[in-house]
Length: 330
Image 1 (tube, rainbow, N blue to C red):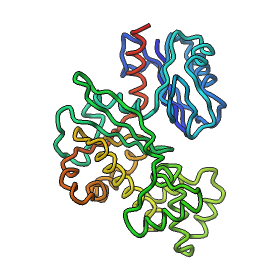
Image 2 (tube, rainbow, N blue to C red):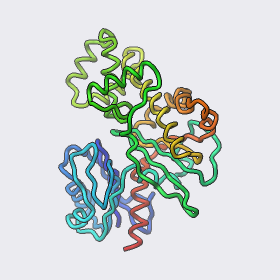
Image 3 (tube, one colour):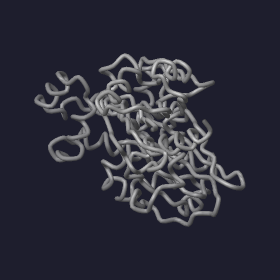
Image 4 (tube, one colour):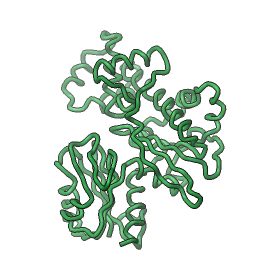
């Protein structure tokens, strides 16, 4: 048996699969709030105990760089290492990989029913592929063809310098720089960045925030769900939240286009993570692709790049696929 996990800054999702059944035949699944635990071991132990199951191997996609089998998680105060997990969980093998590398590992094996098209484009055979995944943080990765298969490559591009594309975004850059000392893309267009954009827009027009919503935000342990709900379902009543989402989608498009240029992603761009699938209408209304292809002399080239939204948990699927491949080696 293999335990596979998508360990996010907000939620930890685990599945149990068998080598015979394959990655899509789930025997058991489990989801908890990551912040309720001090580490990964107690989550896995509770999962196995609840299902009266034993496993021999595990593979976890984690939010942060994995170097020499060790990971310091970006949005969680956890330190993980393969050897320690293998010992504490009494497993034969444990693999850690960056969560975006896990998503990238799944991309070549996605089914047509597991993605939606934003831009049809025309994929170049064996061309590089880019992955942008806004969730709690902003993840980026890419895949290159080695002559026989696609090789997923991790990246921490979400922490690169945010480059404003207009005057409003320039003001946002100054606001973030004053607040954090460094303005990264993750500060703008990830779940953790939603309150930052909202606060900036409110600073431009404080009177536009209703007292009721201000009180709700003040008492909320996490403001992001309230702002996103208002942006999606109460647009007319909450123009600040709606404008927050519009800026985020524009910046997603611009940064996805940046990534496509940097790796020459003529094989396509895939949007993963938890946020894009929630805002499909906003991704399909044309604003995303305008920002994506607004690259001067390379606008026409980017207009031909296929762009798709992944509609399944690709990080979990990729960790499962990778774990099953690695388990064959033991």
